Amino acid sequence: MRIKILTRASELKEGLISKLNEIGLVGEEVNINQPIIPQLSDADVLVNGFSKINKSIIDASPKLKMVHQSGIGVDNVDVDYCTSKSIYVANVPLANAVSVAEHTIFFMLYLAKNIKNVIDSDNVTMTSLMTKREATILGSELQAKTLFIIGLGATGIEVAKRAKSFGMHIIAITKDPFSKKPDIDSTLFVNEIGGPEMLSKWLVRADYVSLHIPLTEETAGLIGENELNSMKNSSFLINVARAPIVDKVALFRVLTNKKIAGAAFDVFWEEPPGANDKLLHLDNFLLTPHVAGWTSESVDAITNVILTNIVRISHGKAPLTIVNRELIN
Image (cartoon, rainbow, N blue to C red; front, side, top):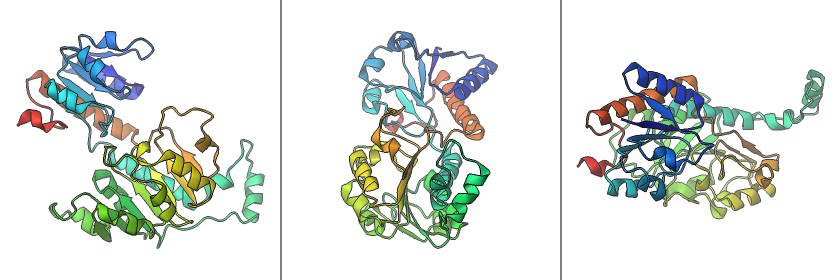
C-alpha cells in the first residue's frame, strides 16, 4: 500500500512515517517543490495538510482509497467527487480541540491586556516598557465580559470551559441546539445556548466573538458588513476556524474605522498572506500563522488517529472518522 504524505508540517511527517515503519508500512513524503500530481499517481492513501484535493488530483490517482485530512476541516477536499469515486474522506475532529481552545484564550488575553500597543517596537527595552506603563496604556479584564461562541462543538466547549474560569458570561449558538442530546459540558460552562437565528441578536451583546465552525457554503461570509457593524465599538473578533467565514473587505473597513476594537486571526484568506496585504498593516489586527492546533500533544494525537484509519483501510475497513458516511451505509 502506497501512503503519500502531503504537508509542510515536518513534525507530522516524521511522526507518521516513524509510526508507520513500526507496523511494517511505509509513508512517503510528497515533495511540495515539485509537481504534485505525478507523485500521487500510485497513491492508495493521501494524507493531506497542504493542498486542495480537487477533481484533477483525484482523477490522476486511480488507486486512491482514502484522503485523510490532518485536521478537522475538509473544505479543501472535493468530498462529493471523492464519494462518487468511492474514496473515503477522513478527518481528525477532536485531537487539537484543547490546543485551539488555549490559543483562543491566548488571543483574548493578548487583546484584553492591550499587549500590541504596549510592545510595538523592534527595539523594546525594559526602560521603554516602564515608560509606556507610566503613559497609561490600559488593558482590561476578562471577568464579567460576555463571550459569544459561534459553534459549540468540541473546540467551542473547550473554550467555554476555560473562559468560565475567568468569570466570563458565555453565550453560544450551535446548529439545532434543541435536537441534540443534553451535553453536560454545555450546561455547566455556557450560560445561554441558542440556534443560528440568535446570531444578530447576540452579536450586539458580545465583548468577544469567537468563531468555531467549519467553512461550508452556508457559513462562508457569515460575518459580513451588517454583522460586524452590529458589534460593540469595544468588542473583539477572534477567528481560529477559517478566514472566509468573515468578509475580508468588511473586516478591513470596520477595523480601519474603529467600528470594533480589534480582531485576532490564526487563519487567513490566502496562506501564506502577501506581505503587502492591507490588513497586516493595521494596528488593531493580529495574525498568527495557522498554529493554534499545532502542539506536541495535538500532533501526537493527530498522528495516532491517522495511523488508526490507515490500518483500518489496509484491512478493508472504513476509517473511524469518515466524513462521507454514505459510503458505509
